[in-house]
Image (cartoon, rainbow, N blue to C red):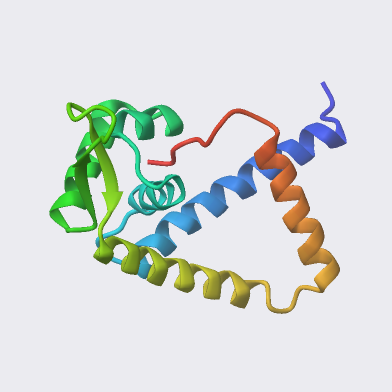
Length: 149
């Protein structure tokens, strides 16, 4: 059975996205040795959401609760997040970034942005715009984020 051009393109896209994910994971380790890609992602979500429960993180990223629990415990030990009682229900604990967590997240974000800028420095503006549009289109086409850890 012959492979169509679309099937070949999908195989290439899948392969290149795997390479991209591996590079992102490696880069995250270089940016901050204590911060895995998943940890960075969880910190980013906490910043964007203004805080949430660990169960919300697990549901959002389709991760097992035990995986999130281990990540949260490590981030809490590192002083990057803290638990606060939910104002509406004091039985519920909401995770928030600490000042250190905000600082490290900002530092890693700047470093990642610089690395991407350097990698794309010789791309024409038109290609950058198209690439950005394609990524937004791809990421907006399906269900929520998929964990990579």
